[in-house]
Image (cartoon, rainbow, N blue to C red; front, side, top):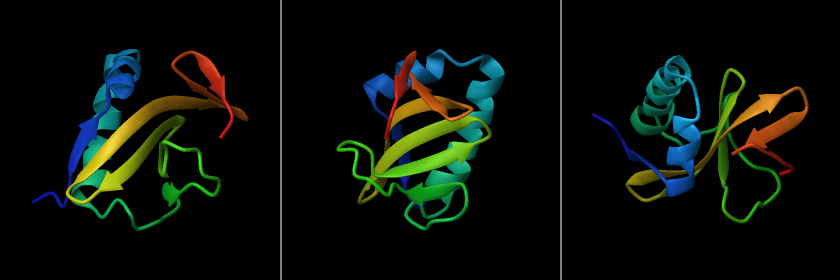
Length: 99
């Protein structure tokens, strides 16, 4: 039984749709396992609290070169952005982002 429901924000929905079908499937399964079924606030090497406050994002989850930025509110995990790490560059929605 999931500890928290994983909900996608409007920006994250579009960013997820921009991924290939295989990447979407892999990422959805990984998000459910790591953020919904497991405790999304417990840090490990692929899931951690951001060191610098970015306003909207509280935590980062890594799945390969994909990045998921989320916050936790009581019984749900709110995914705010989905991006891709290319070398030292983070790209979200086609834009290079600095956190």
